[in-house]
Amino acid sequence: MGNDALSAENETAPPVDFRAVQQSPEFQQLRSRHRRFVFPVLAACLVWYLAYVLLASYAHDFMSTPVWGNVNVAMLLGLAQVVTTFAVTTWYVSYANRRLDPIAEEIRDEIETAQFAPEEAAR
Image (cartoon, rainbow, N blue to C red; front, side):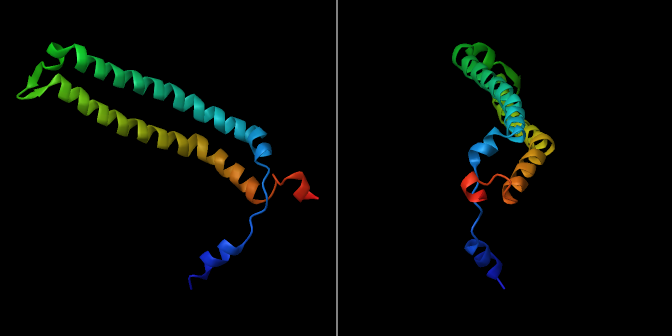
């Protein structure tokens, strides 16, 4: 009753050679897939945000154009910024679940089975 957490704390994790983990082909693939997704999406989001800020700063007439009632272009683009944030987050979670998590789980399983033990500890 509640002792599982205590016994897990008392277990000593086997030493891990993290340099060997980082140099493994699986880790290299994981890092490559992560970067191929994150860097282009980050660049696109920064451009989108910068465009909004520049329009708000220098295109007052355009941004204050009424769309309906008191709602103007600036409000719609601001709302689109929020929607974009949620859309990119959802897209990344989906991508990570399909393309990153299986590799990360494989690496974690290898670490937990001590396949990446330091050479001193392996002797």
